[in-house]
Structure formats: structure tokens, C-alpha cells
Image (cartoon, rainbow over all chains, first blue to last red; front, side):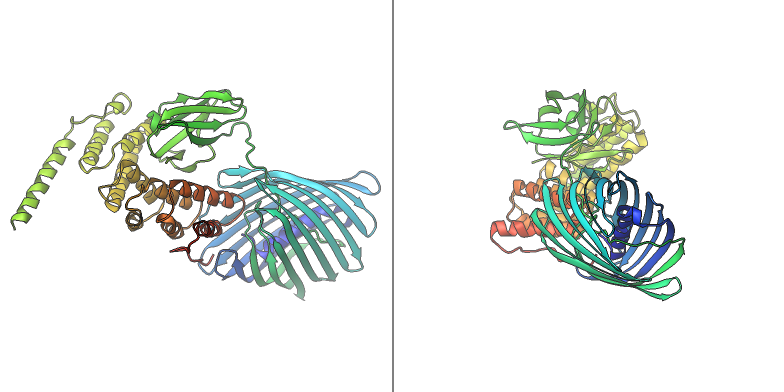
Length: 380
Length: 214
């Protein structure tokens, strides 16, 4: 789940990352808080209170940002989010810039298993005085509980600035396991002193499993007094599989307090569209394993463990009286064990190369009551 | 009255048998010998005997003890784990009834551990009186484990109970987990897949989980 404020933080942080050479050095800390009405897909609408502290540090070539978000719903359920991002830019020629950035975040709702992500991104920019284009790619890891996937994203974008108005557009193709989709997002941002107005409009299409449709958001920051400003936002945003965000409609009203700032002049270029990354599916890193089971005859079942790079694989479980059984290698990364196993539910662990016992992917895990985890295998 | 006395007598016999079975030194489980140290082994044998007398499957209790030994747990922890599982098997047996298979009782115990209530299992048994419950209850536990609220998971499994076979339950669970891994909320994934299941069966769902506030 995502909150508008979090969305703004992501956008702002990434914008900073993306627009490096237009920024003078600055350090800024803000705290946003307020109330929202959120209608998440699949849930009833609900009121919520939020608080979002943010810290940013920028030099000409380096940007660092961190933010957190704490949201409490009417039901008493809570969302806790955290995000950290860093970027480094270097000029290749007069017009060409390279940019390397990374971000890491967590997203935990109620007592559910949390989402996490760790992403790296590279972009090549071609900039002119008031416009530019870029292309880039992102990849990394996205986690849901103990399940990890590798998202992949390719993007093409452009921006232009006219007086106080900055406009950009981005085309992103995303892959996540066997899902793929295309986002086309346009964003406009207008600033006058501390007053800020933003709007975005997006289309998700060419989608295989990622949903489709139109989405958009409006955001307004109105200075009130000194370091205090009012924020009003609303709209609809799409799901973000990487960060565990589901689509929602929302309206939000709150305050922003600028706790401190050493801001120089900065002309901002909105840079949204960072919010969706995608995944590679079943690629396993060395040291990881996944388990599948298939019926090999009327009574026999074959357990297949995929373990790339392993030299030996052992299995121990209820149906082996918890004695380690060596699996037979049947393919470079595939190990098998065949046995008559009656229908039922069994606890099982596997071990690669004599290491620690672990729960392979593909199984539900639970606390084994002995200080570790165990996988639950169902034989129908 | 005679009938009542007869009943009392039967209970008396049952208790006597139970006590007799529970006596130390009786009905030793050979797989524990040499692997589980005394006096933990004797205590586990008593639990096994009592479970056997109550009609519960004892295999999962032995497995739990062996798992603890294999993982180097201390004897008190092993005994506590076996005792807890015994209690869950009792609860599942009471809910599912004496006609249930050992696998169903074990699956029911797993669902109870995941958060299902005994009355949910009893209702599921009622709906699937002539069909195996192992996979349905395992699906319930799996859904709860991936973040679906327990009452919603129970409603979903019950909604499918009268029509779905084991393969459909397995496919349903796999699809929900996949959707969640793709970023859908557990409740959304469940709703979408239930809808698809209903469309596939060309019928309306008897009990679709109602949306709730986040």
C-alpha cells in the first residue's frame, strides 16, 4: 500500500536523483502529516491519519534521500514504510550525462508479511538548456516475505521547461515474473515561489497480468506561514508490484513543516514514473532452492529441488523420519527424490552442500518450534 | 437408566484401557529409541499412547519428536512441541469427527495452528461430507500464511467447498499466491481468484468474502 505522501517523497527523491545538474547543493528536512480518505482496490473506503518525515541531501553530483511513512486506518491497522535512495551523476560530454542510482525500501501492512525492494538503475541523459531526453534500465530484487523476485524495467523519457512550468513524459515497459505491462505517464509541475501545483496522467496498457486503465493525480502545496505549508492531493494511482502497492483512489489534506533547509536555487523537473519496476521470475541465486512435487506413478511421488550451483542436495522431513536423504542429480540444477508418500501434510527442510537446513521456495513456511523454519508440503 | 449405566460402564472400560495404555513401559515407539533421551522419551510415549487411545494419528507426533532431535533441540522443547501438536490434533479430531482420516486430522491441526477455528473446520466437514478435506484445510492454512485474514480465508475455502476438487484447490491457492507475489493485496487476490472460480463453474458464489476496511 502506498500513501500519497509517500508517493510524493518517492517522486521528489527520484526527481532529485534524475535532475542532478539543475540543483544547487541543499539539505532539507520536512515532516508531512494529515488525514486521508483512501479507497484501496479490494477494500472498503477508509479514513486514515499519516505522518511522513523526509530528509534530503544534494550536491551537484550526489543525491541522498530518506523518508518514512506511518499510516493509521480507521480499523486500527497500520502501514509502515521506509525508503532510502542515492544517486551519482557524471558528465560524459557537454550534452551527455550518465546517472547511477539505487533505492531500498520496506512496506509493511498490519501483521502481513512485509514487502521490500532493492533496486539499481542506470540512465543516459541527453540534455539541452531547457529540454532533454533519457533512456535507462532498472533491475534488482523485490521481496514479499521470504519470496524474492528480480524486476526489470526499460524506460524512455523526455522533459522540457518553460518559465515556471516543467513537463515530462515517460514510457516504461516492465516485466515482473510472467507479468508485463507498459506505462505512459505525463507530468506537469508549476511553481511560483513556495506555491506548487502538480498534475499527472498515466495510461497502463499492453498489459499481460498487470491490469490496465487510466490513472492520474493532482497535488497542491500552498505556503501558509513561515515554514508551514498546506498540502492537498487526490486522484488514483496504479498498483506497484515492486513495492507491494495496490491501486487506490484517495483524497488527502495535511500540513508540511519544513524542519530545516539549506536550500539553494533549484529548478525542479518533475520526474515521476519511477514507481513501477518489474521482475524476473524464477531465477534463483546460488544458495537458493525451490521445490516442486509431481506424481511419478500410482503411489510414488517425486520431489524435485532446483538448486543452481549446488554440488549436493539433501532432504529431511516427516517422510524420511527426519534423516537426511541425499537427492539424485537429474539435470545440472535439478535434484530428485522419489518415494511412496501417502496423501497428507508433511514438514520438510533441504540442505545445499552440507550447509544449514533451509526452507525451499514453493512451500509455505512456518515456525518449527525448534528455533528455525520448516516448509509445509501437501501431497494430495 | 440401564442404557445410562451401560454407557458409564463403557466409559469406565475406555478409561481403564486408556490408563493401561498410558502406563510407562507399554507401547514403546521404536523410532524414538536411541534418538530421544530419557525421560523425554517416556513422556512422549505416554502422549503417544493417549493419542492412540483417543483415535488420533500418532505418526505426526513421532515425526515432531524426530524433527526436534534432528534439529538439535533440547528435550524440554521437543516435549513441548509434541504436547502442543497433540492438543491441536485433539481439537481437529473433535471438529472433523471420528470418520476423518489421519491426513485430514493432521491438516486440520495445521489449519488450527494457522488461526482457523474448530467450528470452521466442522462446517467444512459438513459441506464436504463425502470428499477428502486434506487439501481444502491445507489451502486454508496456506492462505492465512500468505496474509489473507483468517475469516476471509475461511469464507473463501468454504465458498469453494461444495464444487472444488483437490486439483482446483491447489490451483486456486497457487494463483492467489502468485497474484500476491505480483503485488496484489491478499484480499484482492483472493477476491479475483474466487470470481474466476465462480465464472469457471458458471455459477454464483455462495459466500464471497465481503470487502473490509484496510
